[in-house]
Image (cartoon, rainbow, N blue to C red; front, side):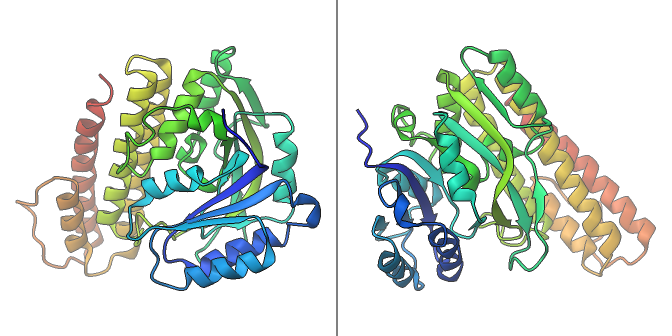
Length: 354
């Protein structure tokens, strides 16, 4: 039986983000008052950072007593760090928090109030800004549902299917860490949580498994954290089509392998996940390509197309790689790349739909 010393463990996996981590922690400590002393702890798992992360953690200890931290002797990759930070937690609930995101004013109290309703899994929305948080925050939502949503996935499967149908982003399926809260005992009850280490989505496996077993799920249509766009550790240069393709491929392989394993390839849940991932990844990548090549139109267009095709397992036999400035020629090259991309993505998805 899981023993809990606190109501909530705020669990932060980190690696070489000392200045950003300091901002994240400042947004938390500003909301921690003495009344929360016995209810909230902060847990940090450091993936062998080489910067000043250790000092940042020590400074945190000077501000808040309930701090647990761990530092790996070497970088173990994101998945094992995610698992470790939850292993260290002592709260009834765990809140994943990315070490570069900011907790909005009042959000800690808001989360604690939601936990009074005893959900097994809680998900909420986020604000989005740029990497330096200088752009005005924009509220985003993972779902087309008009309001917040609750269901018991075992007793109300149709309601859960409605939620899946209304998802419009992978964040609605737990791709974004900082909006996820869950019961620690439910997490610990999932066997073989390390099965998908290397996918970057080991946490998605555990959360899908909790929902598949039957869980009280709550989606709160309120943005409670501020996310830095353009700071994806899995895609350092989101403007590079080749890197973007590899990032998309990570989403496809991770989500569809996990979904098929947890829900079963013939299940309605897997089919809904498949449709969502297909819609988001394929059309999102094409949209990014069109923006990149049609509107920027610099002298490296052909070379970038070449790299994209190579990264996606395609060939470049019949096209010139000389710089091209003519808009119509660029459009033709882009069209060819998009068609090959669709064909390649179709083959990728085919193995997950049968």
